[in-house]
Amino acid sequence: MTCSRRNFLAGAGAVIFTTGVSGSNLLGRQTLAATMEDGPKRYGMVHDETLCIGCTACTEACREVNKVPEGVSRLQIVRSEPQGEYPNVDYQFTRISCQHCDNAPCTHVCPTGAAYKDPETGIVDVDAFKCVGCGYCLAACPYQVRFFNPETKAADKCDFCRKTNLKEGKEPACVESCPTKALTFGDLNDPNSKVSQLIKQKPVYREKVGLGTQPKLYKVPHGKGEIKG
Image (tube, rainbow, N blue to C red; front, side, top):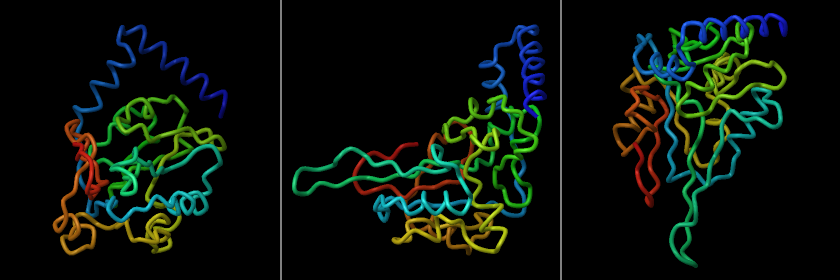
């Protein structure tokens, strides 16, 4: 597989540079122009920042269930700078992971079809066998949440536990492990699902919606701080 990846990249580079189109222009043009059809289900998630305590139980559960190697992570919980004055100091915690975009830029630029959106669930996933390690999807993702798995040598990211917990009829590992119930998962196409109801009941925001990616990771903003769009 190493040899085939090398040959592929050499050929791809030759095509790009002989046509006079830079890699950045190629990615930029395809990222926001294409659109994708929705399937019968659209799995999404809400991270309630008002309930998150930054314990990182979710990251550890994700690593264990999905056998994520040390040194890389499918999701991160990031802590803000201190807010308020001593002794009334507070922190904001936010989730950084794949947004499972309805219009996913990573899938538009993948030359082998390794990056794709599952037509049945709307989950953006990676076929490690098809991945040639070109890195186009890493560069195209505006959320910078993809990485190369040091064991499979393929692009990797959160897949909502599609191949593990979801396959067994469970919720994603992060949702099951959260002690404060800060994570809610479900079908956005179902108006009666918990995730759909939560989005209706609470103020939510999504990251970088102006790019047209239509992310399916919603966040309930912490009481303090700016709501980002």
